[in-house]
Length: 377
Length: 254
Image (cartoon, rainbow over all chains, first blue to last red; front, side):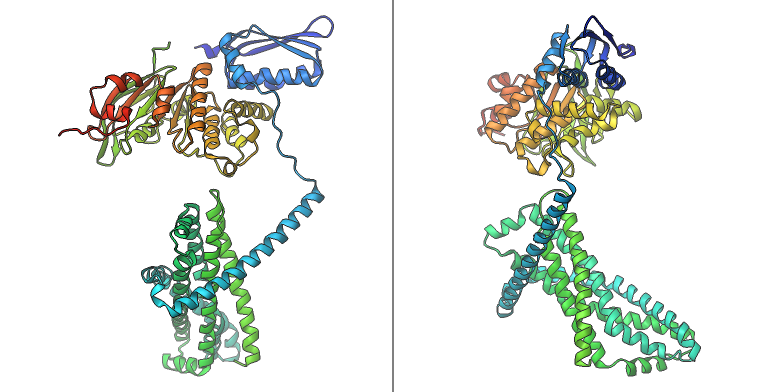
């Protein structure tokens, strides 16, 4: 085979500031790679005024070889010298003509650290502002269209709404129930350790029931919905946006908010309270399991729970879920509709939907805590 | 050298599962020629291409590229074949998270020992050859459809392949951009001696670039025509081939 032929170079200084560089063998990717670094180093060190590159014995030359020849010419030009390529075979000369670049395009200059910082702060602030205005206008749009749908219920895509309710609600029953059971179990177990010192195991029922009804049940279920369905909404709508399906809806005279967002929003708002109830029920069962291991009779446990948790606790907890559901679906859909272009856009939207959904849930929960405190609920 | 087959397709049967799309087809691609694979929508021309570049396994038969049967090739042999071919996909398939230059430089970085500066020069050369040097540091999403296809060709050229497979290079492009692309193919073929296998159904491109055309048919699952595009247009006996090249519907009596 011909590739056994070594690719070699020899740089010989001649009279005056002249030099001759002789290249031999195959100037393919591997051959060129083997001699690029040493050859360039020697050439830079020698800095000849007039360089003759003898390539008559080059049997094969591809893009890499041409690059080598061009780099030699460039180095010569940079050091104020000249380079002459001699005896290049005609077929390679053609290659050179096709590939020859007179200058290299440089990457865009990065900003200095200070300018960069100012640039980033400005971008961040502008982004925050636009995001805020987008959210406000989106909330307004949803409110108006929800009201409209309230007066004209027929305009709602009923089959879509039920499909979404199934996906976001029915299919999530298992995971919410399991999480509820485990949380009830863990909570009971952890608090019992403290309560046992006072011989007050029975009050574990109070603690778990109130904690679940008022805080944990709604919060955990909302987190499940945000991560399961909020991200799904964003990804679905994002894909539709990328595929121009959203544009198709607009040009058909169908409003994307009415057509895509409302079914998801209504489904999420209706499903979250129901899911929360499942979560609570299984939370209580989990707590009950722990209680029975301490020989507390089931009937006593149930009595304790119904005494400890008032209707206010239950309703107060469930009331939050309506707000959480709205936030999750709204943010998920908004992020979906904001999807940009590019392969990672849909993934980014889904991530943003989950992150801002969770933040919104926690912030709303805090506001509820303050409001409930002042209302004395 | 020009008449030596560089790709040999022998008794190839392709399909998915139990559905056979093409049955027992045979053809050669000669070194240095520009071959177009034609056919109506759904006739299996893209499927044939995907088999020729080894993305799918054929149901039976063999595909020999430059002496290696890619159906049975494994390990290093398989990688060696891949270095001889370049593929430009229909929509470009450029990596969206990298600049155009990095897209071209990727295989050079992965498969050669060239220093960074050399890779940079080579990548810029390839981009220059397709007329995209100015866009080197742009992202694929900033380019138009035609530029993306040219960038895909530059990426396919990165390792100086002997054979370049193009999947519908001019689909969705305006006539001018499409003609520029044809010009590029001819220039690469002339100056680098690259063999082209092009899947297309754009008549003007076929007449502009193709040395030879083969046409696959969904009904008979075979190659129904093989020859110079002009000859096929003027002399073919097959009604479908005539319809295709003359771009009109002819009533075919059953």
